[in-house]
Image 1: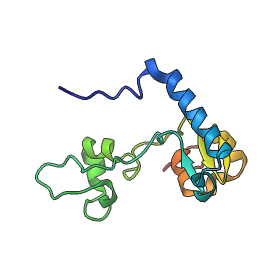
Image 2: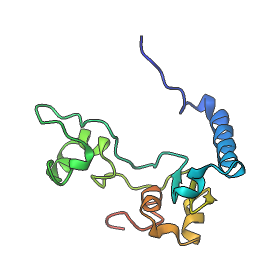
Image 3: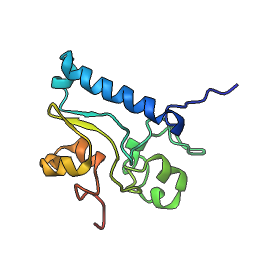
Image 4: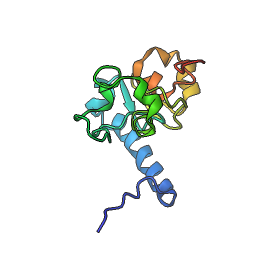
Length: 140
């Protein structure tokens, strides 16, 4: 009685890539407003990101990753693995570049190296997508 999400299964990688490629082409071919209205579009989930749902905290008030450093003391990231895993970006617990595609200023990029070569690391979403390449990792 569970619902399974097979989107990230290796069995469907080819289908997922074909759909992504078709969507990328369609954005520009049919002049979808999001292609020129939005400065940055992720086609793949960043390798390090904060989950949007409520933090799995016992006995605490309802909190989200955006509360780390304000309602939730930053030291809890270090002390509690469930917070580190849930809030990898806010806790600075994960630092690796995303393997995937991103659109920045109406141009398609297929890697962090391409983004860096075009000086796109000035954009916040690019820094999240490519923290290693854009020198965003603590201690780097």
